[in-house]
Every structure is written in C-alpha cells, then in structure tokens.
Image 1 (cartoon, protein in one colour):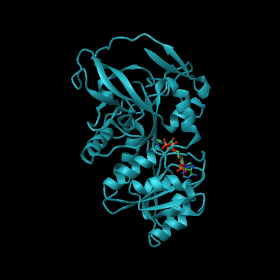
Image 2 (cartoon, protein in one colour):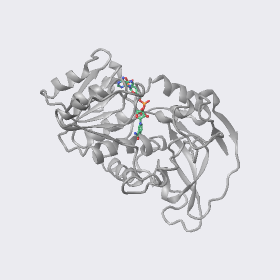
Image 3 (tube, protein in one colour):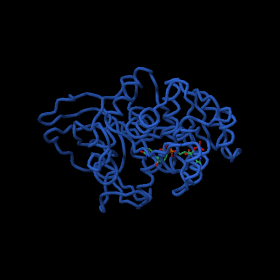
Image 4 (cartoon, protein in one colour):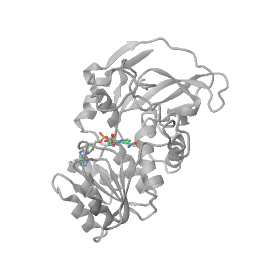
Length: 337
Ligand SMILES: NC(=O)c1ccc[n+]([C@@H]2O[C@H](COP(=O)([O-])OP(=O)(O)OC[C@H]3O[C@@H](n4cnc5c(N)ncnc54)[C@H](OP(=O)(O)O)[C@@H]3O)[C@@H](O)[C@H]2O)c1
C-alpha cells in the first residue's frame, strides 16, 4: 500500500511516498481503507519542525482521515466491514476530562498517521461518518470540526442568539461559522480578503471585517455589538490578534485560545481581563464523544463542511504548498481514490 512518510522538520520537500506491506488487524483493531484526509495547520507545523513529535525516524503524517472498514480483528464489536468511518484525533481520549494519558498518541505526530492507503487503528478510535457527507467532507470532522464544536458548545457554551467572533477563513473558523449559524448564533468574521468575506456572507455570516483594511478590528466588533463586545471569540491568530480578541469580547465573555496562525507569542495584560471579568480558556481538539456529538448535529442539520479543494493523495506536497500559501477558504483535502 502507498504510504507517505516525513521526518519532523524535513519540510514539504521531505515528504516521501513509498510502498509498504499491509498487516492484518490485531485484537480490537480495524483496518481502514483511507479514502480521504484533510490538512490541518499542525500538519504544516510538523513538517516545518515547529510541533512536538514522538519519533526521530520518518513517520506517517496526517491528523485525520475518513474511509471504509476493510477488515476487523478479534473482539471488534463497534464496526463491521464496509462501514464508513472517520478517525478520532486522540485515539485514547474517548470521553470525559482530558488527562495526559488520554491525549498521548494523537494522530500524525510520530505515532499513527493517516496519509496512507490503509491504516490499522483501534475500534475505539473511530466514529461513523454522517451519511450525507462524502469522504473528503467527513475527513474534516476529526480535527477542525471537533475543535470548533469544543470551542463553541463545550468551552464557550453559546446559546441561540449569542454573538460569536471568528478570525480568518481557515478550516477551524469556517467550521465554526457553519456550526454557529446552524445553532442560531450571530457571527462576525474577519479576513484579509474581501472575496473570502463574500463567501462567508453566503454561508450566513452576519457581519464581516477585513482585518487588513481595518487593523483596529476590535473597535469595529464593539461598534457592531452596541459597545458590549462578542459573547465568544475563537482565537486562532496568536501573536497579532490575541490582545484585540480580549478587547473584542464582552464583560464575562470568553476568549477560547485555539491557535497562532499569525505567529507564536502575544501577551494578555492581566488588567484587560480583570476589568470586565473576562475569561480565557485553551482548547485542544476534543474527545471521541465530542466528535460523535458533532457528527450527530451535522447529520441532523445537514451541514456540508466547506472543502476548498481536493488534491490526489499522490500530490500531497502540492496540497501542503497550496495550504501553506493560505489561499484556501475552509478545508483542503487529499483524495485516495
Ligand atoms: N487547539 C487546537 O486543538 C487546534 C485545532 C485545530 C487548529 N488549531 C490551530 O488553529 C489555527 C487555525 O488552524 P486551521 O487549520 O483553521 O488553519 P488554516 O486553515 O491554515 O487557517 C489559516 C487562515 O488564518 C487566517 N489568518 C492568518 N493570519 C491572520 C490574522 N492576523 N488574523 C486573522 N486571521 C488570520 C487566514 O484567513 P484569511 O485568508 O481569511 O485572512 C488564513 O487563511 C492554527 O494555529 C492551528 O494550529 C488548534
């Protein structure tokens, strides 16, 4: 079976495609024919050497995948051959609160990765795909979708009518836009591109801000919310945005810290939290239970996650380069045919 491997820090050109032998599933394991995977910012950080990994040797990258069950090992009860499944980002975090043990072994960072024609994985680390989604769409639930779900509904606890601020139009933010609108929230979203903001409006965004043209965008969020601020901010920007995200959230509102696409670092002055009793919480993807809750809602609301472009898996380096250029809106996927 064709398998991609890379060493941490080897860059996109270090991705190599090889032929590897397939092994039968052991007890409790499932062999999955990968049909699609999606790219996440951490996949880029991993090849660029900016993310902790568990292996010195070249490993299989890829944080998520969707495909079909090819074979099941002894004792497997949750799935049967032919089922359409997606991987769970943390194979050991099934439910409940996070622990160090539960978040050990996340996919694509030195242990199991998804950029291969077939993978062997525990049946506990799989979730049924929503029936209305194709494999590329279903492959976006495990990381970006689950992170957006966790931030909006578990950490942020938004209600219908809540105002949510989203930064940029990448995978996590567009997932959050689709989920928040389906849940009856008001969405304000920023982007560097007017064309992308038009697409966001078409998906239901209530107000849009071009953060290049309006560098003091927090003031604009306050204006759009009658001086109160957003109930929840999904902070994916990091160094260049975190201060304004805190300024843009209402008193006792929450900034969920997710990522740092504008660079690591950034400071939050204690006083900016004290005055307004604002809350800041980190979120790290989520449990299988959150992925399952997301899948149930996505099916009920018939949400189709936005996949900007699907590359052939054999062209994975081109997909990484396209993703790195940041021209995408929503998700970028790899199709394994
Ligand atoms: N904590 C977690 O569990 C978790 C899970 C998933 C992702 N993440 C992190 O979340 C971040 C987003 O991930 P992703 O996969 O959605 O990335 P992505 O698809 O690559 O999103 C990139 C987008 O970020 C926007 N952006 C860049 N600089 C910005 C700025 N200064 N202000 C506002 N937006 C800016 C751009 O949007 P425009 O082109 O519209 O300007 C760009 O297209 C990454 O840092 C990632 O590591 C964390």
